[in-house]
Image 1: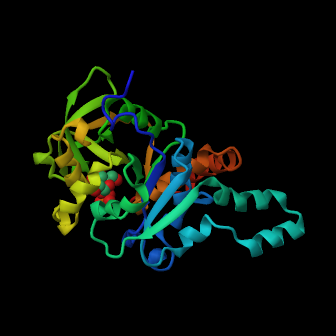
Image 2: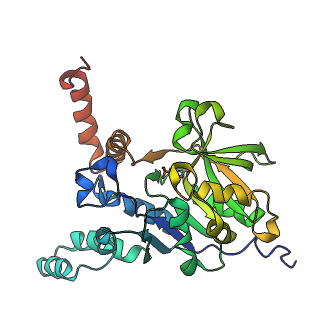
Image 3: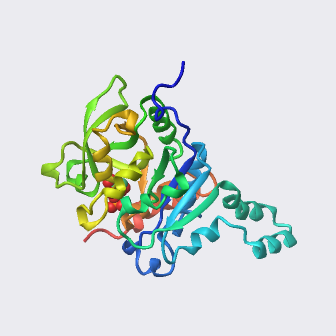
Length: 309
Ligand code: G1P
C-alpha cells in the first residue's frame, strides 16, 4: 500500500551529538580536555555514544561542537604517526584499538558558535540533516549496551511518524534536573503519547515523574519550530520547548510526539559522583578488569574504606 503520511516511514540515517558544552562540573580537568574525552574505563565517554548510534544503524554522526573540542575529531581520525610506530613494533593488538574509533562511523562536525542552548545546538544540524528525521544523542547519558533503546525508538517513529523521546521514571525530587513529559497511555505498554512538555519544572509543578533522557528521534519539522523558539529556562533556546510546540501539530505536518519508556540501565557521566560510579560499574563488568577490581573493592569496602565521620 502507498505510504499515506510522508513523515511516517522515512529512513533515519543520521545522528546528531551536541558536544559544545563547557563541562564546568569537571574543572580543572576540563580546562584543557573536553568532558566528552574523559575516560570511562579506557575509552572516552563519546566513544560509547557514537558506538550506540552505529549499533542502531546510524553511522553518519554530526558533532555540534565548540571551541576547544578538537580532541574529539582527532580521536575519530587517523593518527598516522602512532599507527606507524605500532606497526613497526608489530603491536597488532594496540593498532586495532587505535584504529577502532577511526573505522566506527563517518564523523562530521559543525560549530555552534555561541552556547545558546540545546535547541540552538540542534538547529545547527539543519543543513547536514536536511529534510530527514534524525536522532539526537546527548553525551552525558550513556545507555548500557545490554538494553539498547534507539532501535525501539526508531520503530515507534516508523509506526507513528512525528518525534519520539526517551522517557524514564525518576524520583519526584529529581525531576527539576530534566525535561518532564505529561503523558497518556497507548495500546503498547512501553509507548506513551506525549501531551505536554516542560523543561526542568520544580517537583511540585511537574506533570509526571517521566524525565526526558538524552535520546531523541526528531522530525525535521523541529528545525522550523526551533527557528522561532524564544529563549526559555535559563535564558537558553530549549529543545523541550520546540518539542512542546510540535505536540499539537498534525502528523502530516511533522507534528506529534511519543515517548518510549526506558527501564534499562543508564549512566549519567555529567557529574562527578555519577561519573565515578559509572566507571566502577562498567569496569566491574569487564572480563579483563572485573574479577580483580571486584575482589579489591570487596576488601576495600569491608576494611579500608574511610567511614563518613
Ligand atoms: C537536557 C535537556 C533536558 C533533558 C536532559 C537529559 O538538559 O534540556 O530536557 O532531560 O538533557 O539529560 P541538560 O542535562 O543538558 O541540562
